[in-house]
Image (cartoon, rainbow, N blue to C red; front, side):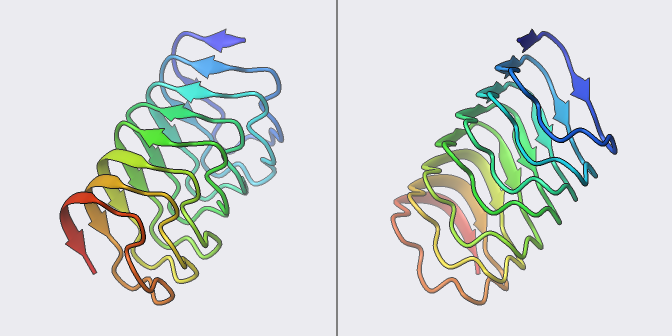
Length: 151
């Protein structure tokens, strides 16, 4: 299934997005306390908001357009995601340990107060990186390009 427009399921009791493959717009799943899986979802062209949700993995998601908001979320894994065109907000996440396969963030990456973050995974390029108070992060790993880094 493809949604041509925005999909707002905020505060719903949804657990899985099933066979949905693409959303040509924004996807809001913030405060979805029962969300377990994005199902077959591979692409969101707009803003993807999972602030304060119970989602643990981005699963099969390969492309995010405008940005990802996951502040205060339970996100543990970026799954198959390798490229993010916009900004990523993950401040205060206590579950994430690695950025995994994520290689390019064309916008800003806000990771401050991600106290369990141990490595930046395969990250090579980001516009601005904020890793303030990431107390378990020991180095910048594979990072090759950044305009600014805040530690």
